[in-house]
Length: 585
Ligand code: DGT
Ligand code: CA
Ligand code: CA
Ligand code: ZN
Image (cartoon, rainbow, N blue to C red; front, side, top):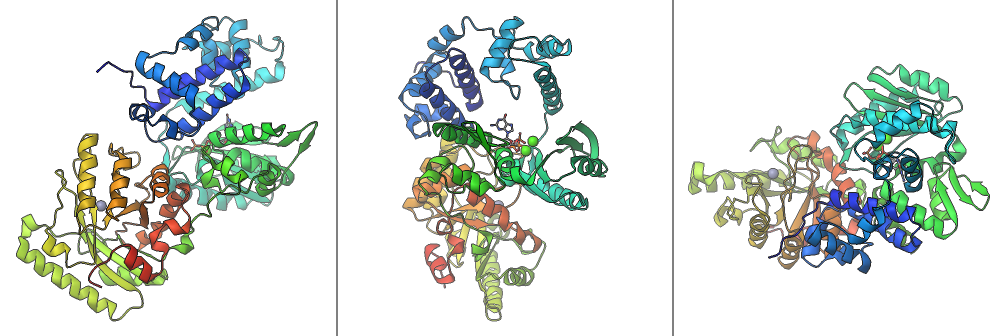
């Protein structure tokens, strides 16, 4: 086999961005430029490796990647470079590529700056341009001025503050910070409206910083109030309309003030994602409209929007839910009014994956059932870790199982909701299941999960999951990728093969709503759903309070483009039992 260059997606995006910049400086055809923009946006939000897709001949599955780009990828993966790009950049100053990373600096400005000051070293260009700005030498360049010089300096300084690489916060942590802060900010009488934007509003699994828009007539007073917030560690920026701080927990907060008339535009712009904004801006340009955080320019007039709905509608689009703003095909589908109506928490009628004090849970079966009843559920399955046959012997395990079944029967005689009994069983490293069929067959259902040997190679772990799917007594695959956010990466799995097998054997894939799992991840949920895989959301609760994690799972489903119909536990009891192949009923 000839050797190839296995570029990771971020490396690939880095190269594509440089090619894009070079093409922009050289005034390439706008369609070609757009093709690169679209490809970059879709690769940035892709969880599968482009290299792998290329190896499998599946590049065309990436939205926005057409024939020309396929050739470029082939050249990159086989030679490690692109001849055309080498030619293109030969007479460009290398420093320009570093400057493009600065907000407000597009390729042409970067080219002007790097040329004017002979910035030929990418690794020092930002540092250099900062010194040049400090020395007041940029204001005299044609197309620049005192104001843009000051802005450039501010942005670079802010960039440096960001550079202290921070861990992203779990959504649930960001949410707690957001709730406390919102309560405090609303104490200020000058705050007339407040909206959280950015990745938090898009309900991403993890959040970098919190972005807030505040409608007020008196930004000064709002900022003075904010500055007294007890969780602030230091103030990064306190400007006329923008204030950024770091909290003691190291999370950054960006607040922007806005008038009521411009709230819709601002919300749209700072909700992002960046990839979505790029696609939306391109769509607007096709109608000769140009989009900014202040509104939409059409000819000479600037149209402002107090509501986001009106902004999307002005562009001929149906409203796009924040969760869908991923820079994929949402704008195309919004144009055709073909976006899915997303599942809501209220649609959920029960779940099947919770633990009690039978294994590692904190509450009794009765307490868990009572809490589920209070949520208005129609059905509720407990799935404790199965008792171990190697520790106890099969006979004792069978006795335990029988007693367990009796206690569930007892509870069912005195409650409205249908209680189901299952076990969560381990998918062992060799793909076998930790509990013998004698026990499994007595239960209503079983969840197979991986709890060990997460770092097996791709083929092994894929086959391991498929073995579990093929097992006739397994109904659901629990937390399928094994990821723990900020702790353990997802297993390296051939998901397409796993999804195919799940469809073939009529098995269910779980969205695990534990805030540090959120597993299956949203982009894979979309892929699974599109193929027709059955999906359900479970909390994996280990206490009554844990049942409330359901909404985090719903967010994942929404980011996975799921309508209610795609999620099994929105079904009424009878259909649910049938679709899950629940036994012994
Ligand atoms: P995060 O904070 O890393 O979890 O992710 P976001 O999406 O909240 O990103 P953030 O806080 O940097 O910016 C919030 C939104 O503002 C972002 O989603 C889109 C918009 N935005 C910020 N900078 C740019 C930019 O340079 N270009 C474009 N098109 N949009 C931007
Ligand atoms: Ca943010
Ligand atoms: Ca931000
Ligand atoms: Zn588990």
